[in-house]
Length: 471
Image 1 (cartoon, rainbow, N blue to C red):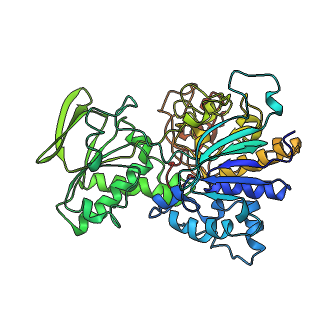
Image 2 (image 1 turned 135 degrees about the vertical axis):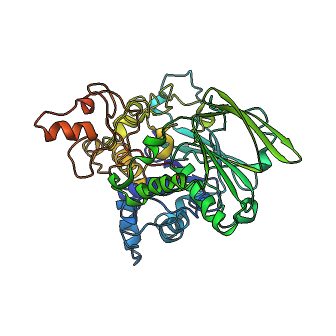
Image 3 (image 1 turned 90 degrees about the vertical axis):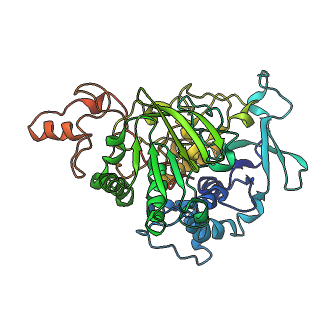
């Protein structure tokens, strides 16, 4: 009953457009809804950031096939693009392809997804009932479009985590919004004057935070009165900076090395573990109070950058039967593979339509949104997800389950070090060329043993930052 309808795709970022390309390759019609005025809206927001993964990892195979039909020449596969360059040199030419362009709807804000004529409680005939996509166009007019299946590739960029260690905004955070930025602001470019010579507090314990801190330190070289304080909500500095030269993506490893050198040179204040408790605005700036470990801490700053990650927007899925892990907010089969509380060093196992399925037949969440709150996503992961899902929707179940994914090792243990034989990493990252999950595992194998055992107790997953690599 739904076979003649298009497959709805929410989001025209790298993964959303890759999904459209794979559907077209299988003779299926996509219908892509993008809230922005053009493709790659989220990437444009961090267009000044150079990603860790080279072009070779950032171009989907089906999308490449479409582009090469137009005479497009791929960028140097070893070069590291800026977010804005991915949009200009890849996404925009792809969106302009005559086979894809008619299926794109820009300025289309999706507000809800449901089964046409059925609420969430209704079961009879549900699987054979088309999806209804409720959306508003750029003029605010309401529309409903029907679809045979839905692929949600809307990402998480519009839902940054707040400053509070408990996942909530701290008192005063919303009132201080004019002086608080989220994600990776362009502090050395478009927003230079906003940060030059200011006292800046950066909150976050991931690579996005390192990006901001290093940009501020470069600004400090030109504006020496710029002061940088870096607050990590968890005391995991060793994990964060430990990848270094063991990282298979050199640019990602170089971030940790550069931050280590800056800390050793005393160019910034580092607070860990830090928990903000209140922000109070005043004539002299923002008075930030909290706890550094168990001790009270207070400082006056001019600007705050909250780089604490992102979370999925689940409001539009209220009428869809979705199954999500209660902690990670990822599909239950995927969650233990990417949960930073559980997984060890290495790369995420291949996964596709089977692992991303929900109780709602024909509905899938892909891309960075499929990872929920886990900060572990690479574009190449999303490309394999949508290849598998397109095959599943087309009825090619064997191809859907034949999932292959080779990702670069991170060199960083994402779980806290534990003793040998327990889950997670132990002894720090393994040497880059070693067939081992961590340093202790490499040492044990060098001594003729089977290993330290930690690689058998937990799944393995990559640990790149969300920004700079996410769709």
